[in-house]
Image (tube, rainbow over all chains, first blue to last red; front, side):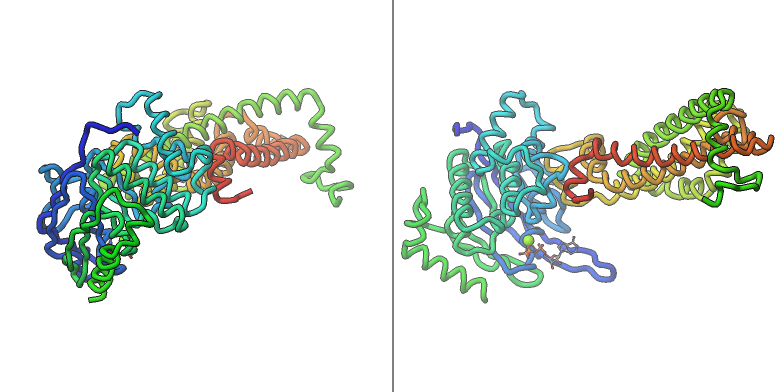
Amino acid sequence: MKIGSISGYEVRVNGISMSFLNSDSEKVVLHDISFAVASGEVLAICGLSGVGKSTLLKLISGLSLPTAGQVQIDSVVVNGPHPGLGFVTQDYSRSLFPWLTVARNVALPFKALNVSQEEKAAKIKQVLISVGLEDSSHLFPWQLSGGMQQRVAIARALVTQPRLLLLDEPFASVDAHVRLELEDLIARLVDEHAVTTILVTHDIDEAIYMADRVITLSGSPAGIGMEFDVDLPRPREQIISRAEARFSQLRTDLYLGLRK
Amino acid sequence: MLLQNSTNPYFPAPSEIFTSARSTLTWDWVSTSLKSSLTTLLGGYFIGAILGILLGAVIGSQEFLRAVFTPITNFIRSIPAVAKVPVIMALLGIGTASRICSVSVAVLFPVLMVTLRAVATTDEQLLDNARLMGYGTYRTIFSVRLPAATGQILAGLQAAVQVALFIMVISEMLGSGIGLGAFVIHSQQTFMIEDMWTGILILGALGLFLNEAFLILERRIAPWYFKSKEIR
Ligand SMILES: Nc1ncnc2c1ncn2[C@@H]1O[C@H](COP(=O)(O)OP(=O)(O)OP(=O)(O)O)[C@@H](O)[C@H]1O
Ligand SMILES: [Mg+2]
């Protein structure tokens, strides 16, 4: 892949809170959360189920707006979906259009952009190869396994070379082997294009392997529990990096941090 | 079988119906009527269906339009379709235009309501993705909300076929003297009972044919839907 000249967005989360109005009461899910992600940095967000990780990612994407505080992308306050975003939502299967083939689903983000047919076709082909779906481009989403659907969603998020990648449990449904491959695919892309990436994951090994920095969400309403840098050298390699003493130290810290 | 040696003048034997249908006079009349009926039916159906889908899609996708139009459409819809026919005839006369209009109005409302509901309840995830991809209002309606509503809209369109047929017959009986409905009522009033039955049988065959044609067409229009739902 060519090295793009554009660089990743810088993200600032400034004291955001989020609550949902249920029928009778207001439920505060996130309270006063602040952090920043530098251009090209990979941030992993961990936390127990239901703590508010997906809610936070949706706020960063601009799909929903916080009840207090603000999100800034390259110093611009987010008040709707920002261009140049790639978002793989947790409920990937519902995010694909069942009336379109794999290739057409992946082509969707180009609809609102000005890209020539040839360039479009080349990019779609390239991204389908990189997620291992080049032979399934003519199939419909409902003809694919869960893991294949998830890879379509990843391909769609990557195809326009986003400057901010938001990944919500993007590898949850793929088998262990494909999972490692996709982790490395994202790591390579991030490295080559300096895409800023925010990855939500349950898997603490994955968080450490992928990230430059990890934050955890905990409590109710959720705040930032712990925050630490992953000082493992890059480029990382699945077997070698995971075998390092520092890796297991960090994973122990994270594990204990999440239990607290 | 009972009818084979029937002596009741209102229930002639099937053989007599056939003989009557073959008489050239009747046949000419029937075929002219059929042509006129098909014009009313198909013209009315397509106009009503297309308007119903378009209006339903636009109204269903905008909350304020929904709030404004739901009471109005609910009221108009509650007037039985049959009762609207005389109103339309009073407005447009008894010609082809008014028959086509009667059928379209009868088709429009059920299709509009079904489309409106389906389009108003598009999966949030699909809409979120449309927003992320920078889709505008127009593209979101036609490239996301409408295709996502395919199943419900097709069910509404199928139900509307029978409504269209019913209103076609009624409008012909009430008005013009042309069409299968008029043919049936005229035959009945002039005691041409075999002719009346010919007309009724043709109407039955027409209903059956249209339903089958619909089932074939909908699979052409949205093959992905039937395959994904494994409806056969
Ligand atoms: N639209 C909504 N309306 C009301 N409550 C909501 C809504 N979305 C999320 N919540 C609530 O916010 C809390 C956090 O949900 P969220 O989906 O962000 O959790 P999560 O950390 O992503 O969990 P998981 O790891 O299981 O995906 C939950 O208690 C949930 O009930
Ligand atoms: Mg979640």
